[in-house]
Image 1 (cartoon, rainbow, N blue to C red):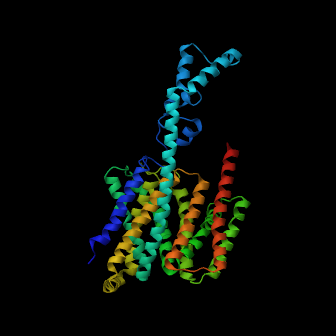
Image 2: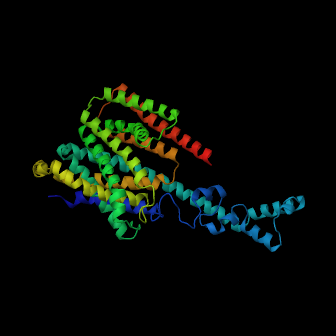
Image 3: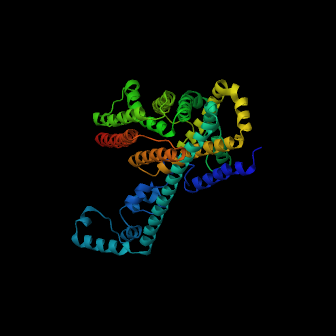
Length: 432
């Protein structure tokens, strides 16, 4: 019998994430990469010192002049033409007026609003980043515990983690916190289904790898994903990166090799499934570029896209999990019940499932507010947090060579992201 006390922990946890996530992401009904059409993006507000409530309609009126000064100029018949600008007397008068209006009540109010807006945005980003890290750790620890209790149910655990994501997103759509996507059968069948298949393989590969080996080893191997992405892009898309970017992959490959050779609990199954996850993740990015290069449906922002992929992956994984492990479901659950672990197994499964979905959801909210380089650094630090926490909780040990290899691989992945971003910015500047 499962007590309510055990079940209420993931339910309270789920409610907390919903409240916090929506509270710190008030524009969740919009795409994270596009602000509302009548509002100036926050980075422009910060650079041009505008109020958070400034709209595009008066953007050009206030980006260089105080509104009050602009009205005074017009009321005085000041045309602000080139002849007036070349008049020293007028320039001095204009400067005095502008300096006087900088301390006007309207200007002070606008500066106070900008300061408050930036403070709230910074605090919200810090809280979301902390939640992202914490939920990632909770997911990996709970998932590993589930796989230790029933290693023969790895496919079932992967499916359950996908399926429980629906408990999060469906109420959000139903209650109107976020507009649900509107998709045609063509959008789903031709554009989203291939991506969902690869999305399923990414998750299954990671889960089975964690079950077959140490959590730390799985994340060290998954650090080679940039190398896999670069290789597949060159082979399939004929898209090549600058040589310095390829050079940053050398420490990644060398580090993973050192970590694998020195891994005390090395398992080819763990290595192969982690690499399968890498290949599927890189392929997912390539397929997305080919199938989703045009607008798909309505209200399909990043978070809704992830929700749709989760729904499709749930439908894809259920028959596969049934075929792979359905014959041992009865015996495995009976064994857990006899050992008094069934309630713990279900509770840990719910915790892993909800934290898996919500840490991805929170990551979209948090990473929307930081630069690509900061994104890469945050992802690297998250991997370090997961590896360290798993070693402390499960007692996994690493040799000095393994520690050096892990640091080399993770540092190389960060260097790859930074150098690649540098050349992407440089390429855009040359095209402009």
